[in-house]
Amino acid sequence: MRIGIHVRVAGGYAKAIEHAKNAGCTAIQIFSSNPRSYRPNKIDRPALDAFAAMRREAGIDPCVIHTPYLINVASEDPKVLAGSITLLKADLATAAAGEIRYVNTHLGSYGKRDRKEGFVAMCGALEDVLATIEPGVYLVIENSAGAGNLAGGTLEELGELMRTLDHPQLGVCLDTAHAWAAGYEINSAAGVDRFIGQAEEQIGLNRLHLFHFNDTEVPLGGARDRHHHIAEGVIGYEGFRAILAHRELQEKVAILETPGEDADDIRNMKTILTIAGAVR
Image 1 (cartoon, one colour):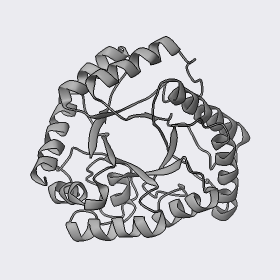
Image 2 (cartoon, rainbow, N blue to C red):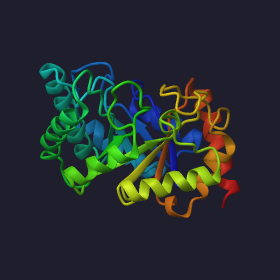
Image 3 (cartoon, one colour):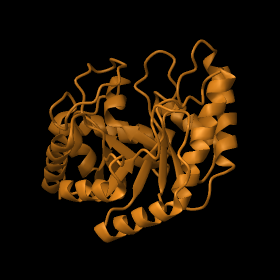
């Protein structure tokens, strides 16, 4: 697996790459704009070209854009939906301009609407977005922690989304903390085998491009999105070891979204790389 962290780019791409190198990353994730705004940044091609060159020189590939938190393609509010579509299209365009392979997004919440009705509408919104995607870029849908009426909390719903849209550049990202919170017991080899078996059956492992590696202290099935440091929560060493050792996941990519500052990034990367080294 190629493993990395989410890096802040507010201080410039060069500083972000240096931090990723110091942490031992072979992949990275970024925000392309303010994650709490509906206003995307304009594409700066010279800066993106320089960023791509820095990544090549550092041996960091792939890069992932995480879309803003405000995105909700399951919403029945026309303004929220329109803003979400605009943000998604903007990040896909930035990815294409910057040689960035993945754009990762949450789906959002159906709110008070009927889930079946919301699912159909959500698929329509995603079809609109996917009509603009350029070659070499993949849109990956992240599983939710399953709280309230959130979309994408189960492998079954993610699989139904993949089958309904059936687009070759659409895939899935599985967040370990969210999976645990949604009730998938992935703290042992047996549990991980069951989870990956279900993912293969429901989604297809060819559609599974990305993991977010996060531990958590939320009880199993607790439906709360709370990230914790690697191997210091309820998923633990054995859970991450089992994922890293799984023979069908060796070519996948994992991004850490653990809490804290730069020193915590270094510590969490050291832990996950130690676990990865132990299974080789």
